[in-house]
Image (cartoon, rainbow, N blue to C red; front, side, top):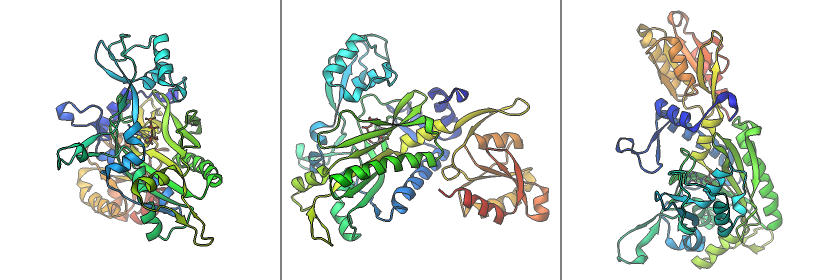
Length: 460
Ligand code: ATP
C-alpha cells in the first residue's frame, strides 16, 4: 500500500474485528487455525463482490453458464484430476518448536517476493534455505527437517464398508465441478463451443502455512470460470483475452494499476501451455490474487478416460468431433475481499485537523448503500418510514446513537457511500440531506430522487 495509508495487517485485522467485517473463527474458543467468520458488514461486502463477479463473467457473457456443484464428489474425480497423486506442498518442520512450514513460503517471505519460487525444485529450495540460513518465523531458530511432500486434500469417510473405499474428499478446488458437468451443461443449454461454465463455491485445502489474515486459509471460496474452445490456436487467443478481462474487472472495481501486475508462471504443469497470476501489492508484499491458465484439453480428456463416458463435442455445423480445450480463470472470493479491504482503506486528515478512517469502495460492493440517520431521536418515526422504503431497494443501515459527526465517521469506516440525515425540514417537505462519503458534500433530495441516484451509482 502507499505510505500515506500506513496500513499494516495488524491494523486491518483490528479494524475488521471492531467494525463487524471479519472476526476470528470460533472466537470464544480462541479460534481455529486461521479460520475467519464474516460479520454483518463483511458478509455484505463479500456477497457484493461475488455478485459483481457473477454479473461480469456469467450474466454479461452471452455464452457462459453457471453451476453449483456438490462439494463432495466421486473420489475418482480426484484421481482423474491428478489431485490424489500430486496435490502436495513441500513442507519442512522446525525441529526446535515443531512449527510446520511450506518451504516455498519461507523463501517468499525471506526474499520479500523477489525470488521466483515457482521455478525452483525441492532440492533448490532446500539449498536456498540452508545457504541463507532462513530462520523459523515462530521461534527464530534455524533447525529444519529436510523437505517432505504434504498432502493438501482433506479427507472424510462415509464409514460404510470401513475400508479405504469409503474415503471421500472435500474438494480442493471448484474447477472439477465445472469439468464433470461439461456434457450436462452443453446439452441442456444447447451451448456451442466456445462457451463457458462458471461457479462460486467453497474449497478446502489443508494448507501447511495458513496466514496473513484471510489470504491463505484452510476453507475459502473460489470464483472460477472455464472457457471451452476448439483447439490450441483458440486456447492461446482466449488465454490472452482472459488475462485482459481479469485485469479490467479489477480496474473497474477501482484498483490502482500500480498495485496490480501480471506474473507469468515459469514452471508449467505438464499439460498446461500457458499460465499466469495477477499479483497485488498487499501490505505484506506482492502476492497472488488470481490465476489464469490455458489447460489444453487435459481435464476433459482425463475425465473421459477415468469415467469411461464420451466427452467429445460434435460441431453442429461441420460435424467435427473433438475434446474442447480449456482456459481457466480462477480467483478467491476471500482473497479478492482481502485485496479490496487493503486497496480502498484510507486515513484522511480533514480540515480542522480531525482524522477519519474511510473505505472508498465502489458503491456496487459497499456493504450498505445508504445509512439513515435521524438528527434527533424524536425524528425516528419519519426516519424509519424512509428506511423502510429504501431498504426495499438496497441494503441500508439505521443509526440514531451519538452525535451526527460520530455517526458519519462510523459509516465512513465501513464505506457506506451515502448517509442521509432526517431533520425537521423532512417533516415539512419530505427532503433530507444526502452526504457523499468521498467528497463529504451534502445535497437535499427526496426518497424517489435518492433511489434513482443510488441505483445509477451502484451499477457495475
Ligand atoms: P497459492 O499459490 O496462493 O497457494 P494457488 O496458485 O494454489 O494459490 P489456485 O489453485 O490457482 O491457487 O487457486 C485459485 C485462486 O484461489 C487463487 O488465485 C486464490 O485467489 C484462491 N486461493 C487458493 N488457495 C487459497 C487459500 N488457501 N486461501 C484463500 N484463497 C485461496
